[in-house]
Image 1 (tube, rainbow, N blue to C red):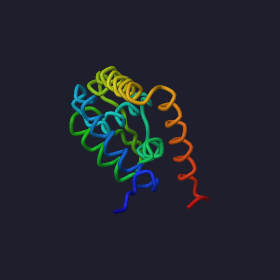
Image 2 (image 1 turned 90 degrees about the vertical axis):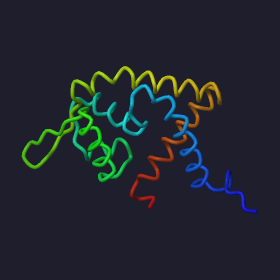
Image 3 (image 1 turned 180 degrees about the vertical axis):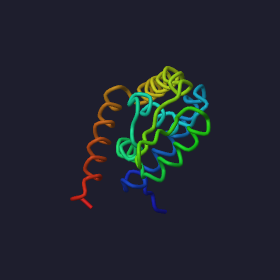
Amino acid sequence: MVNYLGACLFFSSQAFSRISEEIAKEYFMPTTLSPSHAYLLHAIVLSEGISPSKLASIMCLSPSTVTRLVDKLVYRGLVEREFIGKTSNLKATKSGVELKDIIEQSMQKLNSKFIEIFGEQKIESLNLYFKEFILKLNSKENL
């Protein structure tokens, strides 16, 4: 029987993503948003106005994925699109800004849970490795 876990970076990272997503959903329940929507809203709140393409770059998402996620935030009244000529900017509404503290509490509690499970040093190391891997893989010269 084939065991890809630990032998294939792609498989292992996808498995980690699926499992950690399930844990994150529990911690983000107070926000009434999925973790993906919460992180996106948080980035919009902190930016005080950001283009969808810049947001896609920051979040390592495709523009179409950002559009789909933002559409739901707009529908919920948490984000609004401002059009300046042909370009658009995303801004959090008052309701969106009001969720900032709850989102940050959820982020902190989730991070604390991972630290409880793995230890602070492993979490810091893993975050640094993920950052390095993501930056290298996003570099056009490596593809």
